[in-house]
Image (cartoon, rainbow, N blue to C red; front, side):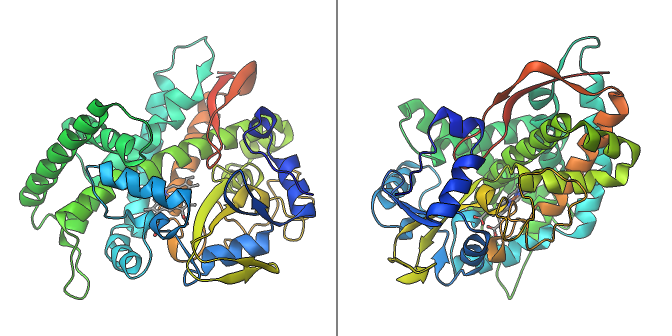
Length: 403
Ligand code: HEM
């Protein structure tokens, strides 16, 4: 009988042997601990992510404990029951995505390239010379937050408060055991952020700078617009969707290169390989380990009967090591060809990450700046601490040397 326990310390250190065993023994595994199905084959994972009619993102459609937890969290949340983009199903999802997608144009993303390069350079230059550099807190975590603030079109003095309001709201949206003051802070943050967005919309009416908030205020599709509440929800969501995974992508990419000196030397010699190195690190040690779906109908996957309301754990990290799709999957090989449909780190299908091009822009900027300033880049022994959760994988701390 197959066995799977993702909460053991050995799994946090290295989940891949356990995931490979599960894929071989029982690729559509019914887990009692997780109260759901654990999918480890690439074909099943890709199918589930793409088949929105059968597998939804809205956790209130789940049966059992998941539904109770989410309903309880939403009842207490200052943001109420409205779903974020990432947790919405049709008809809400295509409507929100149609409006929000207008803000993520290739030009906007390219405009952030220079910003990301400058921010990455400045953050590295600020690091104290002659000491190990803690990559996560000094570069990987602040860079995406600063880029999102710029993308939103916030002035320097607006960035701090908007980020803090978003963080106060993120704390309470997730639910769980929280003190009453967290909810009071969430309510106050919601009121302040709504006031800010209202006055921003008025001040920037007809603005041609075309940053995200001004585009979203004006965006219209078939006579439909985002409400102020929806704009608030999206602003908050963007800080979560765009910052944690990007920080982990950067940390995992640097850690993978440090563990493979030949690949690091190749990237240093030919900077056009940075993009391949980031893609291969997203495959080999993905920031996105698990995506959740909820069965919208009774159906079948891999010969197993899935009931409506069941939770499905789409194990992206396992799919990326599936030998049926990636030959010699445990090897880190920056010259491996990887297609967009094979890489599931940004999801697949209707919820495919809106920020994927921006994530690569940030990755290229961060690694480029690091290689420029650290000619002898190397790990500090014992300087890496794993962080992350069951869903997201990345370092909590990553010390670097070699300036
Ligand atoms: C390496 C960095 C990133 C990774 C690994 C990542 C991963 C993902 C994944 C897996 C999804 C799909 C979730 C699902 O199917 O349930 C997603 C959705 C999304 N991501 Fe990203 N993301 C990254 C960076 C960003 C950035 C930088 C932004 C924007 C600034 C962003 C914005 C979004 C949005 C708005 C969605 C929701 C799309 C929808 O539900 O229709 N992401 N991301």
